[in-house]
Amino acid sequence: MNYTVVRNKTYDYTGQSYASVYPNLHKYPATMLPQLGIDVLKEFAITKGALLDPYCGSGSSFMCGIECGLTTMAGFDINPLAALISKVKYTRLSLDEIEHVKHILQHTLVEFLNDEKRLHTIRIPTVTNIDFWFSKDVINKLAVLKQGIDAIENADIRNFFLLPFSETVRDCSYTRNGEFKLYRMKDEDAVNFNPDVISVYFKYVNDIASYYQTFYLPRLKKPLLIRIRNEAFQPKAETYDVVLTSPPYGDSRTTVAYGQFSTLSNEWLGIQYARKIDSMLMGGAKTSGIIPTGVIADYIYEIYRADKKRSLEVSSFYTDLGLSIQDVAKSVKKGGKILYIVGNRTVKNIQLPTDQFIAEQFEEHGFKHIITYKRALSNKSMPSKNSPTNKAGKTVQTMLYEYIVACEKVV
Ligand SMILES: C[S@@+](CC[C@H](N)C(=O)[O-])C[C@H]1O[C@@H](n2cnc3c(N)ncnc32)[C@H](O)[C@@H]1O
Image (cartoon, rainbow, N blue to C red; front, side, top):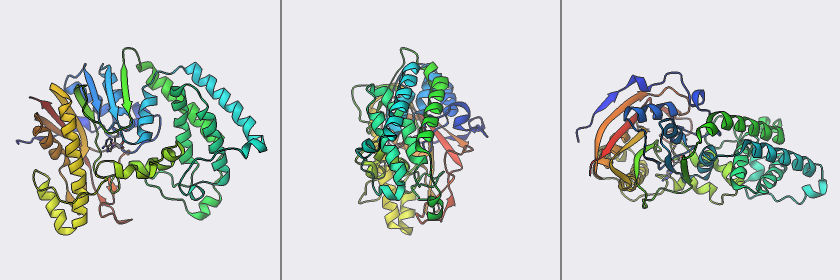
């Protein structure tokens, strides 16, 4: 394969963040910069057809599609919280109904919280080590809130009210703020931590409603249709003209812990398998052998010589990514494009060429590589340091660049 990588400074967006142009409705790790996706779609003159994002996270790729005039899109993510965020963002909701439900909710909460007897009847959801992560007062108030939200009849409106609930769960828990992984704050900080759950919740309701009204709702015009599924992508009858996505950079345990970031929210949302999500994501399952062929093989062998276990973990990720690419490739129309935005992580001081692996996999499944752009990472939504040795505190500088891999389906 004649593989070309071009450093493209116009895609650096120095100093810009996600929030500066399209505020997210809910925090999510490693989001894609919508400005980048929009410009990439424009560069490849994609203005119509169906778009797929097989690992859609909080759904930034759909905003890119909308801004470029696309009206049919589909997204998949195994993480229920990710699917929920994407769904709410791209569902047309009545602002009047949101306002109306907000008032009812406020009213019923006040009544409930003032009624000692009813407070004792509240059902507390199953959350692992709940007392370790939340104070008694927070648990009771979150449970009352959840009961109120569950009573909302309209499922789309109910989903909307679950987003501020999920943010409140995180903010009112003893987790250390600003970290993706679940770490508890120090005991001395926990003692003085008395968040006002109800105020936090309604502040989020107002902020999210305002972002939704300003940035999302005006763009959700007919015939736009975006279907989001909380499952892994599987090829079906539908085919797509373009795939725009930012896949994970490695397994969740040692790169970005999507599952762990979402655990408390997912548990409060009633997801039984919340604690297992990281192991369900790409690279989460064990494999028995290292990848013997292809561009990634030599790199994995180098890791194997340093640490056999790590080489198996890394192999597991690339095996899953390869299988997923095979499925995606089947679902793209002839002449269709794939645009994958990815970082190359470092394991045992070896930087893995994930960009080239992606191009190679697509070439093996009927595609031709067009170009790969390299852009400097300047936004803060992605940690530039992680723990590739998997030892707490030992971090090395990892991805300073991100790659945009473009291929076209030729057969
Ligand atoms: C880099 S994030 C996507 C971020 C997204 N572009 C955004 O702006 O929010 C990668 C996503 O892949 C999801 N994921 C990992 N393995 C998956 C799989 N096998 N199938 C579907 N989604 C998966 C993770 O849950 C995560 O949300």
